[in-house]
Amino acid sequence: MSNSSSITQFLLLAFADTRELQLLHFWLFLGIYLAALLGNGLIITTITCDHHLHTPMYFFLLNLSVLDLGSISTTVPKSMANSLWDTRAISYLGCATQIFFFFSCATAEFYLLTVMSYDRYVAICKPLHYGTLLGSRACVHMAAAAWGAAFLNALLHTANTFSLSLCQGNVVDQFFCEIPQILKLSCLDSDLKEDGLLVVTAFFGFGCFVFIVVSYVQIFRAVLRIPSEQGQHKAFSMCLPHLAVVSLFLSTSFFAYLKPQSISSPSLDLVVTVLYSLVPPVVNPLIYSLRNQELKDALKKLCNC
Image (cartoon, rainbow, N blue to C red):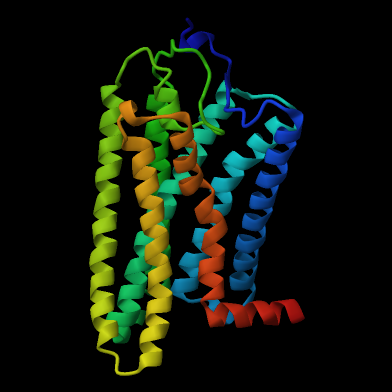
C-alpha cells in the first residue's frame, strides 16, 4: 500500500514482454507518429504559406492540425521510448503533464470541431452573411475561446486528480497517463469532485454535440435544395467526413471517461483509448486534404516551388 506523497513514478502499460514485440510496438507507433507529423505538418505549412487559404475554414483547420500534433506528441513518444529502452516508468510530474496537455488538446479539439460545424453552417445556409459573421476578429475570438476553455478545464481536472490520495499502487493500465486510470488508484471507490467535473465536462460536450447535429441538420436541408447534383456532392463531401470524425471522437472519449468500472477491462480500455487518441490525429489530415481540391492544389504548388 502507498499514498500519493510517496509515489515518485508510475508504471505504464507494457505492450509486450519479449524484446521482439517491444521493438514491433516501437516501429508501429513510430509509423503512426510520423504519419500524423507528416499529414498535419503539411496542412499547417500549406495553409500558412498560401495566402489564398487565409480564410476562416482553413484558419480553423490549421488550429485543428496544431491540436492533433499536440495531443499525439504528448502520448506516443513516451510510449515509444519506454518500449525502446525496455522500461515502463514515467515520473509523477511527467504523468501530470501528460494528463494536462492531452486533456487540453483533446478538449480544445472538440470545441474547435464545434466551431467548424458553425463555419460550415454559415457558409452553406447563410453565404451572404459569411463575411460579417465570420470575420477575422470573430474567428480569432472563437479559436481563443476554444483553447482557453480547454486549458482551464484541463487545469481543474489535473489539479483535482492529483490532489487525491493514491493507495492502490502506481501501475497505470494504459500506454499513457489518463484520468480514469489514475482514479482507479485512488483510495476512494469514487471521488465526488472529479466525478462532478467529468459530468460537467460531459454536459458541455453533449451540448456541443447537439449544436453540431442541429447545424448539420440545417446544412443537409439546405444541400438537398441545391438543384445541382455536383453542388450537393461537394457539400456532402465536406460535411460528412467532419461529422464522422466528431462522432468517433465523442463516442469513444465519452465511453472512456464515463463508463462504469464494472464493464472496464484492459483490452477494452486500450482499444477505446487508441480510437480517440491515435486515430483522429492520423485520419484528420487525410479527410480534410484528400477531399479538398483547394488544399490539394495549394500543396502541389508548394511542392513545385
